[in-house]
Image: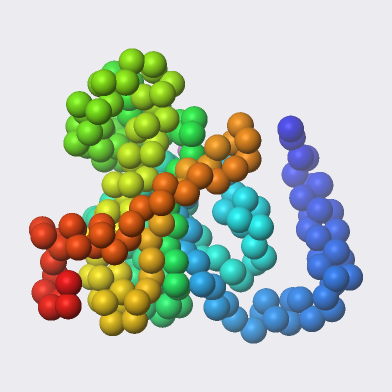
Length: 215
Ligand code: CO
């Protein structure tokens, strides 16, 4: 599907008219400020849109997207987003949403030099290495690919739990809770990996305790 460039401005005007017809105050409220309860970290893939799959309106979800929904602890971009979302927006839930068929995850499974993408994809190769017995035990290539997508989400959830902003806020206020999801574009459904956040935090604290005594 291709939307001609000029059509986008027509679409925008239609969207404004639609919103105003439903709620004449819509843009005044939007303009007043944001108070989202969710931070969503997803893949840049054009088919996986945060607000649309979650059925939420503008202003409800703070969004960060990159190739293969990675949370790399020396990526100033994602770390700033998490810090701001937790400390200032006080989000109640953080979601890492991967998706089956992820090109970034697939590329990390191939024996190929991808130049500037190598260090980014290496973080996914690290996930593979950590779980290689389980992954090599899966003989169907697609099943193995799907499993790596899920394991990658789980590891990125762990990377979020390692941060001081999240540990401190959770121990003092009881939020945010970090969740792992996988979007299945063949059905449109979101699969919740049902990660036990509290248990994860305690396991993580064996190694990544940042001096917060309540852990
Ligand atoms: Co992807």
